[in-house]
Length: 148
Image (cartoon, rainbow, N blue to C red; front, side, top):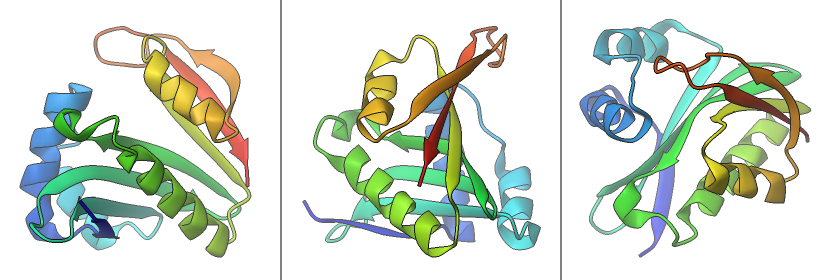
């Protein structure tokens, strides 16, 4: 399988909302994503899909305020995890952000998500602090930072 990564389009939004809810347990929703895509100059959203079938594989969204950026959402669909696709998506966004002039990248990750935290550490992210009750279910988030 050869993945491609491209800018999110309006017709991707229903699929993004579905997978946000399925994987992350929450979503910004179709209306907010449509507005962000059309009107917010600080956000960029990307979709990863199979180059041959166009099957949805993952998604990443970032908030960019040069020289700072923050990852908003980042995932690979569960049925395609542990195949290196997360690394493809992370490599893509790090290159994109460096070219945009970003030098500091942050993200929040569920404290219970040890697999994601291990991947972020492999990419040079460091723990900064805890965000108490960050998620709608009350779980704390670890704030992580990487200098690019």
